[in-house]
Length: 495
Ligand SMILES: *Cc1c(COP(=O)(O)O)cnc(C)c1O
Image (cartoon, rainbow, N blue to C red):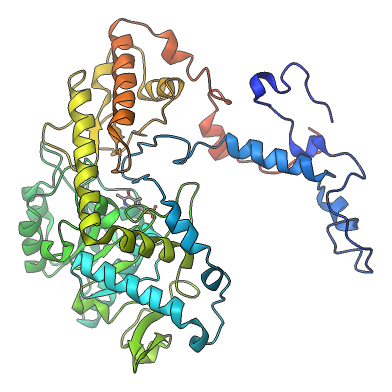
């Protein structure tokens, strides 16, 4: 191994070689007794040579992974204002409960009589989600928001089939998250756009023009991804139902409504809830999450299995399609992420109904605070008060030679993770900021100060700090397109 002396530990922040370059033949971190199973053990074994694992000591391995973890920005290290993601604090109480041995050491194949407590927990979470949404049924099977969309749309499709109706189109507003059209296509539907009005909301005329006997469902997000409440939602629901279609609500933005408004009162038929957003369970890096999906009385019969019920004084699982009317069947093995359920229920119980109401109130207040401060410097994309996230765009960068991406990179040098960039697509060069309820005023002020300071730099024509950013992060600008198109996770001995 060659440690480059010039970079080793500079500023106590070591840029280390690949772990494969650190390997030293014969060095080991474990001392297992000799065994005849030489060929399959990972310790002193042949397999190690064939797959090229490096030989390392335990301290080397610990330092390697600890260093990597420090390169990772997370909600535990700082403000994470990604819009449409609800990157909020993950309370440590949730973690403590999720690690209780009686919960963490159970297995899905255990006899039902031995996991009554776990089933009670799932059942209670179901009851909380039904109460908070006002909907009569929830399926806790879907593994994430997108999976919940699939669950809702498959239920809608099954219901239409049952009525002998062949409908092929799903209408989706222009501002929707990409998973909406993807889920609809996955279900075999074609999608069509609903235009927005000048406030970022669904254009009722556009909706009306496209609603006909070919439309299976309309997917709305409320509040939508522009951070605006769809105030005509009751009218939308009425017209959708009059056309014989179903109203699917993308519930990723439930953080703005939780405890305050019951989606059932908005006339929806199905909605997923991202437990990893609204209910504070950790996310980022792709999972695990959970996307329980609430369904109307009519759609509930199509819900996937398994489903937890309480009957004859004990908890039980409906696992058989025949006993569950017209169930879609399984969407995945077992229930879903137990650890996510435990954290979400702990969040509900520790906040109570009044606390959850505060969650939505403070998240909306925080977003409007950020919006009003930054609006003194640049124009927001929409004038209306926002819900839990606020939207700005790149109009202030026009003619400056600086892109939205450059601006985002400069925020990193200011010590802030950038907001969501270039989404929603309806706004050019969008910057969607969602502070969530867990940030205090001091943090919001520091963020707004940095944001405004950078806008001032644009106004005074200072390009360099943007074009050279980020200067202070461990990695500078990476070729993101190359990383996505030419992914190479293999270590190649020859390079
Ligand atoms: C996050 C999100 C989704 C998808 O949810 P996943 O849990 O990531 O699958 C869908 N719609 C909106 C508006 C979202 O923000």
